[in-house]
Image (cartoon, rainbow, N blue to C red; front, side, top):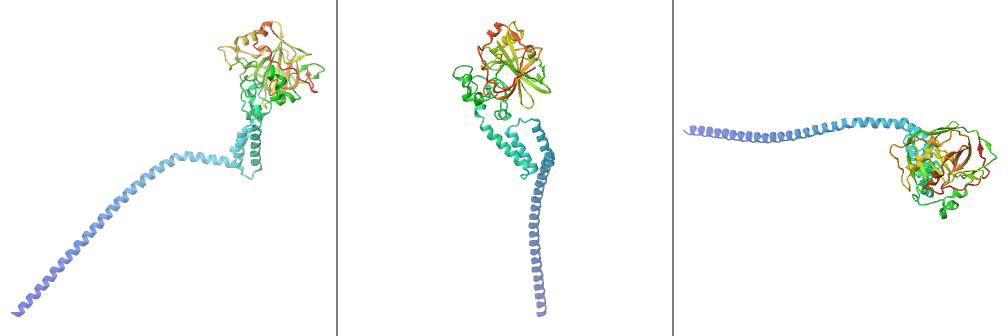
Length: 401
């Protein structure tokens, strides 16, 4: 009996241990599975976040690719520009443009040339340094042009020195300008008359080749030949406070030997500024021209009191009675040739603008053949006197053909 009890007790103990082990194993299995489930859940969440990040990066990559595709043409253009700078094509083109301007270059363009040379040739290139130095000189020159710039609107022509034209931005070609349109005024009488022009415009008082002249012999033989080729165009006329002026559209030319001059404008003086053997004519028409190099040439047509002039009638009928801007009467055409005689024999000399700043280096060609103008037409001209007195010859030769 005792043995049976002992065996039974042993069996119960073993069964208890087995049950405890099973419970422990079950607990451990449950705990492991729970932990694994947590880890799996965490991993799944991580995968979701990674997928979202991947999707975001994929979208950004697609957007970046679109931007790259959009920028690709610009990049190619930039590369082409870079190549153009590297091989000097841009510099060559700009230098060709500068050369085509025939000296009419403003300081900003000269500075641009220096910058291009710096990009293409580098700072050690002597011509790069020279280009910048020249730009500086031009800028310094412009700062000294205050008095001349103030008189730009008073020019009978745009000036002899190219730097004056460029730095003063005088795009209005060769005009007598507007009275009161500039800081320094001038007139034909009184305190601001010709005898005092030199106070504000030194060349008017000290220049040795001034215009107009008293044309008298002896003469040198002229070798110049003139060919007038003026075209009809719309009448553009103004009263600028000093004269009646007609501005001319491009296309009308005066050929002096082989050199072609473009007609810019023509205007009138009463009486004629030029004298022949000490005697003035009733009026003179000055036709102002400029060639490609900026050289000025004036063709003077003397108007002698005589028959009525139909061309003058057209001009006087349409000219503003008082000072003001250019007007262009509707359907009115005018050909400057109608004021020029057929015979182009002439007197010639080197002179100046006949109005301030009296710039020198202007070639004058005064035709020997006069053109009629009626006494009433002279009287109808709105300026009783707008002629500068004749100037000293100062050893100059007057040519004739």
